[in-house]
Image (cartoon, rainbow, N blue to C red; front, side, top):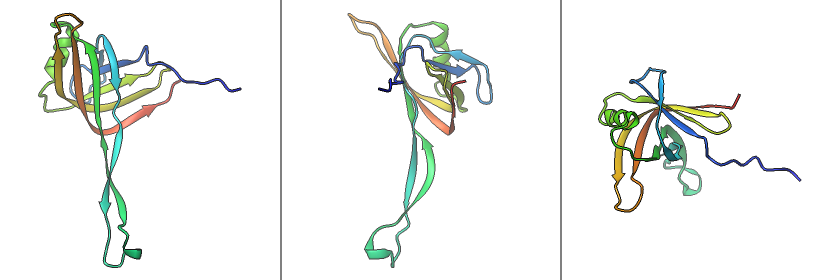
Length: 144
């Protein structure tokens, strides 16, 4: 019987470039509790015409789009990580981002920080959700 290679996300990291693209110096986002990595969607374009076979629509593929990435963190106001995140809001150039998974595989991409929400409950931990919009390609690197 084959053993599964499934793994938990514990140990994954999110790093953000310390300056706008093309910087390659990364700073780790502190106390990440959940990463929703970006995906890729592909536009479809209606290419139907007056003689499309059997009156069925015909489609071609268009441009690829990196979907949003969401990240949940423990919100700790005023820390170096919080200051870096606040600094990214409204920047006119993207930052390089890198997710490293527990087995060493990575995803690297450029993104804008487009939304930061915070929750400050009376009886619970403070959290923040970050939303990033990917611009350009997502580069996957297999574990070494």
